[in-house]
Image (cartoon, rainbow, N blue to C red; front, side, top):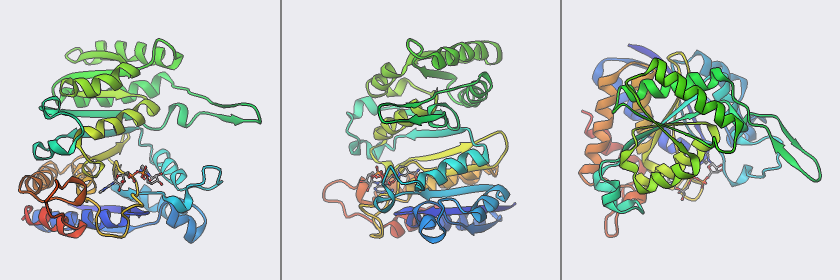
Length: 353
Ligand code: NAD
């Protein structure tokens, strides 16, 4: 097949991990007989420095024309003033809403060999295989904001349609997995959550009768994620709760450097990115773990290009490399010699051929 993939390396370690993911995609194209055209565009702090805005028009045009977009990370200390009018993460929010990618999908896979890298006990982690579906383009992050000398407010709004479409994505995903869906809200306090719960209960009962639905308040969910993570299959929740719970869930896997994400909408196009940030503390040193970016490329192959076998081959290559002891510094145990970003990528590519 032929596909246009737009790369948005961004800031910090973004360019390093995206270079690795691109090499993996090139190998996939060669091995499986596809043609991937890559177009690189700017986003984030580097784009602010270069052209004065975090998401230049040319990037928007390219991303809209692409079959899929693979992003590194944005931000860093140079652009971190919260009172600045133009900030790197505005580029990311604009990109998500421009592409209409309202569902953020974050699988949390535990590589058995890395159980020691998590702060949780191995017996709690045994069998963890969960996936969080976070609503990405609504809720309090996009509501009207106001501020005066004595107060500030952020409006949280959800419509029935916004809730229905994200719950459908989650329920469809659950029906292809273990058939369990956990919806997380704060229905004892928030009106938006009461609507969320009503819509979810009704939709799952009428459209997905085979799905086992559990409902948790967000504070309880935060606790259960650490006390019984293996019991979760698919978790669906609104934008801000999902933002927080997915970072918490990432610690189950031991390192931010291992976990991918996909943001999808109604069409085939999607935005794929590792869940980690630009890691300014290690940027430019060749220390970054490329696994999250490479696993994001695997999600791209599966969701946007429909290449299931190719995606599975990439995921297996990552698991095999880790299983054989390949480690970047973030996942290396004491006494193990860590690999550079490029050397870790080589280990994965070697297992693809
Ligand atoms: P971060 O994820 O960048 O880093 C947290 C810690 O994890 C650091 O110690 C870092 O070295 C380590 N780490 C992260 N990714 C790694 C990898 N692939 N390999 C090895 N180690 C890795 O989070 P932060 O420090 O809170 O944020 C840094 C910057 O990134 C901030 O400007 C923040 O706004 C931005 N950020 C961007 C995104 C995004 O682009 N989607 C997400 C989160 C944070």
